[in-house]
Image (cartoon, rainbow, N blue to C red; front, side, top):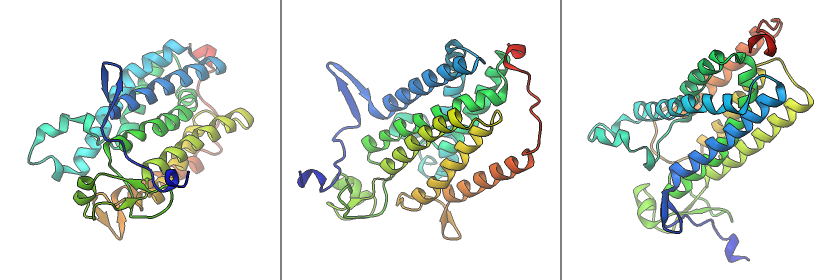
Length: 275
């Protein structure tokens, strides 16, 4: 038992096998997160009387690819030095490299366009999708474990992450060094956030759309601190990494938007009228 708690080993391979079927783990986990989020969003559509599971699936068909494109674009733009010598790498999404900021931004925008065309009020759509997004992120983060990427500073804590000698050396550390499993921290935080949002919406429902703001502010809060643990190469300014500055900016913008609309009356049509 003691040896099991000595550290958290990384998988030897970045793939998952089901008998003769072999899947890329990073892509498979993202796909699983999408399936769970779509199912949960559909259930919430029906519970609130604003849509159906078919609506959720239709939104996902357009929103998910848009999210992948947005996430990849954000990663490529902010880490262009990794792709400038070989632009073909831009297409190798299965090797990791999706920026959550770009993915959420473009995926949500496209998803809301589809939702509106299907008669679902934007505020209601945002409220219904928020918990599912957090849970999808919790599942998808395990893809970083399989890829041995985005880990934190060295640590000897019982849950420290083991990586291969090559991965450690590539990060500038001696073989055998163990690290903070930041993927695990973020996965747990996202799962808890999703559970809190579900509980909050059930016990203290807010005006349409404001639950999504709670998701954004919750995610950016813990992402700021988790990002500060990471040792992968990133642009920095003022002692903070780019994603920390992004967390601050997104949190502040969301807080301002909430304050600016705190006394605004709901202007969206009722679900029955919209549909």
